[in-house]
Image 1: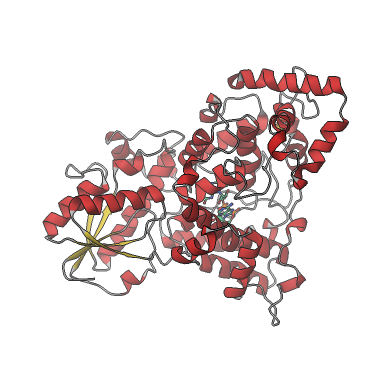
Image 2: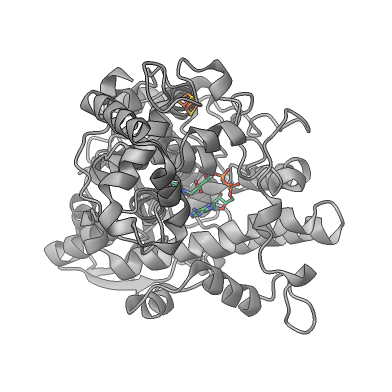
Length: 510
Ligand SMILES: Cc1cc2nc3c(=O)[nH]c(=O)nc-3n(C[C@H](O)[C@H](O)[C@H](O)COP(=O)(O)OP(=O)(O)OC[C@H]3O[C@@H](n4cnc5c(N)ncnc54)[C@H](O)[C@@H]3O)c2cc1C
Ligand code: SF4
């Protein structure tokens, strides 16, 4: 950096191992800011404001303690301009510089806002990597621009590049690249799933400040005992606990759903990863260590690593290659508003009541809940992907647009027309019943397609296939449902479609 520079550190750039922190520079003022433009771009869960702000404050204090110069704007500071541009301008004037250094932002919206602010304030920017991801953005963009590679091959290439789970000859450990077929069991209640792994923090004072600043949130703040990791040390403790207690069963129960466990054997690491308190490679190495010590089977370790080395890097490739057009895609022309109970959890459908209730309470739901329950329903019910995106972006503590949007709009809503998946990810009650214990306590009957107590997933599933026959009728991966439908008797088909129409006419009543 040049003399008297200033540099921004955003709320999702808390990378303590970034090369910036290797030396102490007296000529650089670091700038961190809690601002309304970042709290208000979505209707956020309270914990999604509390946890990042608390992490930022801790990170800022650590920078100060290490001797770095820091200007930190708290949300209720009277001189906080509440936007990137306003604070950049005031700090640039105070420092007397026009030279801004910053790490690249992960979200399109933020990158645009910072570029615009730089122009507005007459700043000359130097943009550096956040040193977090395994594939740099330039390389990703080039690899994804003309056509999106298949995730499986992208993942295999990265396995080779980083020498992960490979035998000496370059073949995959165990002879297979992918152990998904072994990872589909329903969880019978044993082995015991770990309980929530993080220590509780009293953030009541921060919560008062957030409220006093007028930030509007949803969900349970749990401010006096917030259970998300707030420092790198805590994030690493959580990683160690996951590896010890949950990883050995991660693979087997990866696709399971249960009303008896919030997390099953999932890691809860996405928040720590996304704000960059943890580096993906250190998480992968921790899992590899368990495999080498014989503490976790290959299927579990490979399944877990695929999520981080494969999916997480892959969705970022899709995002940066396809934005901003991606955010407007609605290939299925879905137009219905999201039912009101997505914001309250008050629905008679047990699976949705459980998943949404848990999300409102903890700002967390694991992948299969997000995909098979809330995402699947919104897809079948023809809900507008803009509304679905806004919901996911707001409610989950780990939701940052670069990872949320390809998963929601792409993988779960098929609104990208098949970029993320060659077929829509949808299922009827039989699948949910097979993987979970939700249906037992439900007012609806998982076996019925029509009639008063018929599970809405069933008729909506068939209605979905019928209304999108033109798009999916010849899709080789959807041969099975269309064949089954063709075999159904005409009166059953009619009653099923009629039932779906009834449900669609008043989704709020379900
Ligand atoms: C509709 C929908 C929306 C989603 N939105 C987000 C989001 O906003 N932020 C987010 O981090 N993940 C998102 N995901 C992916 C995934 O659901 C979460 O990463 C996961 O639930 C986080 O919980 P965990 O840490 O316990 O994950 P685990 O199941 O333990 O997985 C380990 C890690 O792998 C990574 N990972 C797993 N699946 C994916 C995936 N599909 N894409 C990217 N990374 C993945 C995460 O970093 C996660 O921490 C979404 C998935 C769906 C279906
Ligand atoms: S019966 Fe249908 S609505 Fe009820 S829990 Fe099962 S899948 Fe969900």
